Length: 159
Image (cartoon, rainbow, N blue to C red):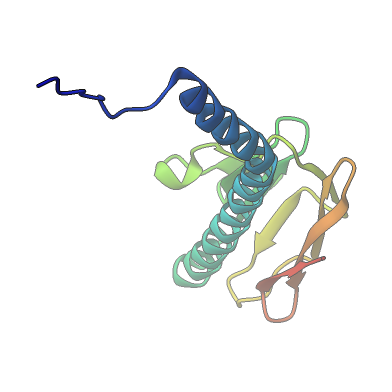
């Protein structure tokens, strides 16, 4: 009696076909994933700026001293500042604590603003600020607005 045994498995052609399908699907989803990741980073940057604005405003009211945020469009960065009360010219100084550390903005964004220093005053008001976040090829993706009377910021996302 002769028993014929066939081993079960995949042929090389079947494996190549499955790998090709995987490569095609990956190549189609990577640009979408990359764009979504950049959008998440931008939104996170904007939320961080709003949080720092809130902290600067609260600190200005509590300490009865001007606090704010300085934006550097060229370096795509920002940090917290305060007005030097001891100086006659009222220069703006970087806050020495962790709040004064440099925070970066997404590298694919260009900033346009009517002012690069946003100051919060002891009475809760602030200077005016309108800043557009521009992505080359997409145009303005969001705008940061600060109401000087209330000293509150808001973000308007464009679609």
